[in-house]
Image (cartoon, rainbow over all chains, first blue to last red; front, side, top):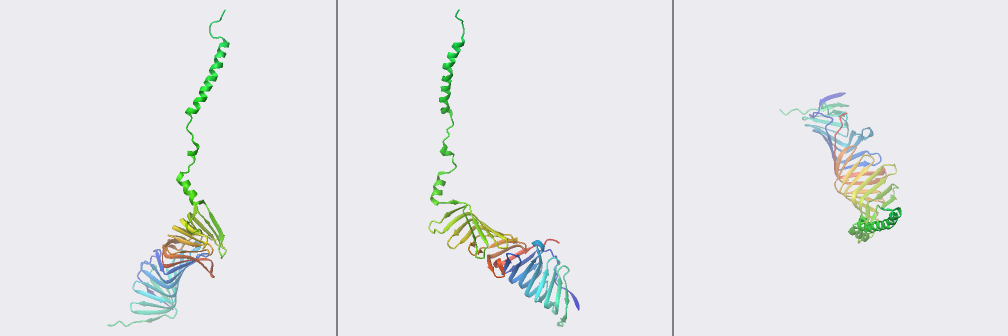
Length: 141
Length: 202
């Protein structure tokens, strides 16, 4: 089943510049594909995306970046919402982040877990699919 | 009936004397008024440069061509090269250009204003601001790059700034190495990498 929540407060400009920081970058000379390794941090406006390894997939004829695929444990943070998963694919053009592999989303105290989650940075919403479970923290009154 | 005035024969006799005399006069003045053309000063070689060139055995536009162990072609050309005073196998090079042609046809061209080639260790060191441009769209600038002509590897441990299809980036160091899943070479940027990519509006 599907479950829609708000995620993050970024004004969601998919064309904001993307900054990638990592320990190292390896570029295959023949094919040109690039892999960032070593605590990779991708930031775009106020959203940050951490992963152990990020692979860059280019648009056709290398005119730019099509997708950033993070693996080895991914953490996405925007505003005060954070989400963790095993892998995540950030489709730069559409501004969608597809997270898969025991996704857990922490929002103001309660956490939601699911198998897959798609975050839309444009309208800052998130959709969770597959065995969605919510753990509500009773507010301490 | 002597005819007054100049007769034809008198004119001819006068000319017979006058013409050779003017010829002689013209001939003698030619050397006086001629521009002083001293051939030796025309050649644009300053004396100092001549001595310097002779003492250093400087050769102009030398080149080195060969194949690396991974049989990629390597070609190095320079504007001039002169041997090092102490170490014979070392030569100092100016206006250096090194081109690596990989097996798959891609190319990498490195250039620098100054450099050194060590014919013993087969290493060419490009210094004084080196640039490298690869046909896969990556181009980088750094202070110095050492290119191993035998292995076809390159290494630079000075700060590297560059541009590629993924955007502008900078890194602490750079290396061109070969391994089994990248037989045609892999650029490794290490010691911290920072890349900025601005997506074009679709």
